[in-house]
Length: 592
Image (cartoon, rainbow, N blue to C red; front, side, top):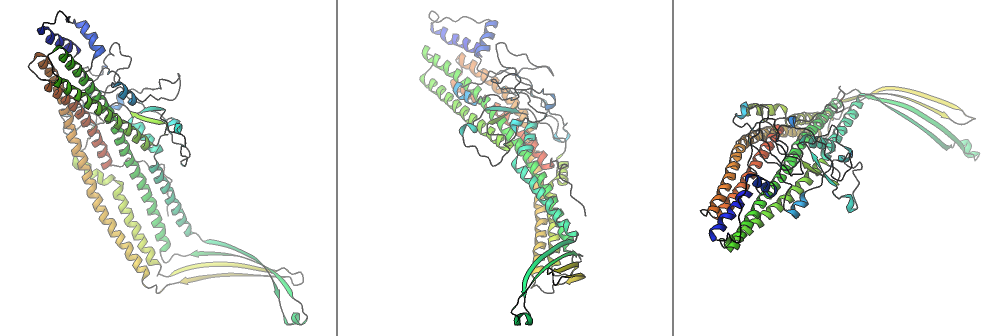
């Protein structure tokens, strides 16, 4: 592109007879390559590489080459460190480049690029689980992957959840940690508050079940007392004397409910249902957390790619402005063309500023979701195709019906409400209790020492014949709750089918959009090159160049959007079909 611009400067200068004042030396291939390496302002045309071959880094670049967009299994793990950290420091942070973008209006020079695997010709029903292969998607300079066998301590939230920072330096961003997607999901499982709340609610339900199971055992009560008082008699009154007596009493009593009313068994079954509901809620929260973490992760990737695209557009707009100003100086351009080029540069700067702001917002949203310390910011690795979906639409819908925890939740709630109906009716049924009691009493008087004890064994029958219809009203209320659960089950089943269909059709559409957008990028690059050649030859207009530049930027954005929308649709499809939570570590529930 630089060679083209130097050449076109010669083209419009020489016909004006200004060769005496401005010389135009033809560029050799070597000199053109050197000039292009130092002043390039346009996206490179994708190059074809052999499978598994990495392109060599460009001469003169201090940064490492871009990583290949490939499946996670083939990406090497890199250990990143802050530029200011010493050797061996276990704090892999990098400075946030967002502020530098606004001040310098440029990104780190792009390095070599590699082909993005996309095979989108195969129908989705017959797709292979491995990621598809296809055209190249340029990348910003980020690590290919950053994972941990065990996430470091500095990504763990503060131990005291009630602690609130009070000083500005306590919330200052110290560095940015790159994360792979799987590492981000693992951190979300470990740190997120909503999942922690769901686990605490599960422990709460388990404690409630243990309390109900304890009602199957008899209760034992121990009583005791010491009493002192004056005892008056006719003789003591005539003798004007009071008798003070101190009595020590004690006893033990045991009670047992035989359970003929059915209330105790119904309460235990209801407590078991509550534990199961809490387990299913943990599954639901964890699966939803996975989807939200993936969505936040892709939002950061999208914002970073928007910065790259808008930076390239700004570089191209500034180059066009310089050429337009030079044309005006030599008399072959107009002030109108310069103003239009200025407007294009201003629009590009605003788009870059907005993209930078969106990246900062997306990074903080991801950090909030993962609940990392306030001094840590997060960024992502390069954009890549997440994978393929191997099932047909019909198989996906049936699998979703079998796996979704939400459907089982309504079935368990239905059983719970049926138990509540039994508990309400048990209040007007007969109940039988057995008891045994042993009491002793001793008078603590040296002159009248006495010891007395007794033992009682019996049964107690209780039956409430009339309660004004309260028990049956509560039973009817529980029955209506059961009907509501059945209707909600039907509604949720229909919603799950829609979620599967929506994600599946979106996946298909974006699968085709990736091919279309890849071809559009190639065509837009060629159109921009032709627009520049036509403009330099005098048969085109500046409007053609501006339009071609904008169309290239739009095509590149469409390609990034298609890839990320494909990944989002795949994540939603995984969520719609199956919950991925693992509750094997949950405390085992005791059986009856």
